[in-house]
Image (cartoon, rainbow, N blue to C red; front, side, top):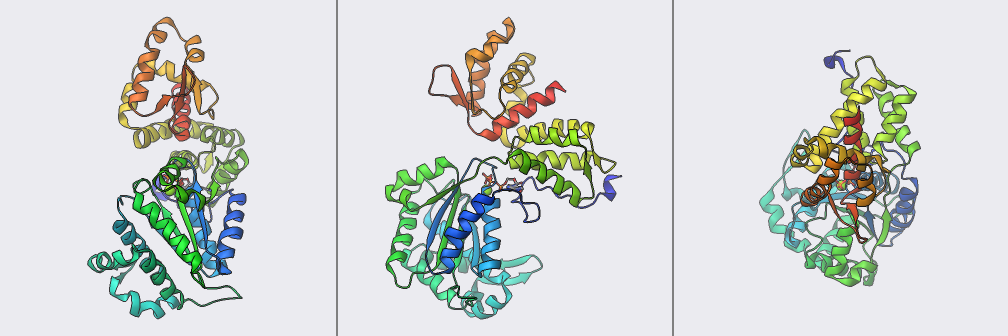
Amino acid sequence: MSPLDKPRNPFLPGQPATVELFVGRQAQITHLLQRGVRQTALGKPTVFFIEGEYGIGKSSLANYCLQAAEQEYGLLGISASMAGQRDLDGTAESILKSLVTSAHRNRSFWAKVKDVLGRFVDGAQLFGVSLKLSEVAAAAPRLADVAGFLETLRGLLQYLPSEGGMQPGVFLVLDEINGIASHAPFAHFLKGVVDRNALQTPSVPLCLVLCGTAERRKELVACHEPVGRLFDVIEVPPLSRDESSQFFLRAFESAGMRVKKDALERLVQYGSGQPRILHMLGDHAFWIDSDQIVDGADVDAALQAAAKDFWRKYVGPQVVDELNSADYRSILKKIAAEDPLAPAFSRAKIAEGLSQSERGKLDNFLQRMKQLNVIRQGEEKGEWVFNTPMVRTAMFLFAEALAN
Ligand SMILES: Nc1ncnc2c1ncn2[C@@H]1O[C@H](COP(=O)(O)OP(=O)(O)OP(=O)(O)O)[C@@H](O)[C@H]1O
Ligand SMILES: [Mg+2]
């Protein structure tokens, strides 16, 4: 099949998973829906922290639950990215933009809140709304204030219908908190919103969900210690082998493609349960295949392409340049031959299997990788730890690609 005739590509290496392609996470979804969304729809405010490594699927999980919160419980779902925000006003602006966009998506709700929110909208476009940024910026400080924030939400909720004994409420996701997690006023704001809301009768039914790595949660807590006690933490682990297989089968099937058994096993193995890597592998296999049957050769080629792609996008071209040295490559292969899911390795064990010339370069290699933020020294002597598990998997992929 020529690339011009290809069906719709189901893989989304850079975006949260669509509901159709979403696999696994049953325990996490049930937890968030039962203890969060449902309780909030019954009037009780709730707070969660979806915690996991880079690319493990935090935003996808939040997004999946947001849709369920809207469709099954009638909450107003708002997902706001804090990317690039460094202060509370910026944070409030992001929340307001997402709030207006979400309200605009819900036609009947928008008809009722137009008088209140219409001033932020420049005009409706084919793909969403265009916002009047100066109006948003002018209104943001009110939202950055704890009381103003709660009053704004309460004001809007009176226009949301209550269905089947459930109360109108808000499901608010604060995603990409990297820049703001270490900003103390943000931590105080969160604590202020939760505490003040708890004291009000009735409280604003708000299910608040933050997404971030364990490090970011620690930063937040370091800014204001009581914040740590607010969150019900939901951990997002790697996908299981079964979930990974299900993912590939479902995705390829949606494009009218089949996957051979051995090809599927290898895709699953190379992916190591890391959703971002599963999508990259699938994406390359989709484009490389020419007969609608994904076989071993397609997977080999996809592995090569995904390994390069991954290192270029997520680890940096500098590391790829370093790996042009033959000795560095063999060291890498040796490290990767260890358990691909182990977060750390020992220098002594790696040194054992190396030639004299390679062994002479091992320490330089480790130091370079440390400078490039790939690894860091562990607590035990001679132990090295990968900074993110996804990079660990990438290293494994890259070494497999070199071996082929
Ligand atoms: N449960 C899932 N089923 C299928 N695909 C998934 C699942 N979870 C995540 N993905 C896919 O994996 C990739 C990473 O997911 P996502 O962006 O949700 O991760 P993240 O943890 O929010 O990443 P980041 O740390 O960069 O914010 C995306 O391509 C997404 O489509
Ligand atoms: Mg994310």
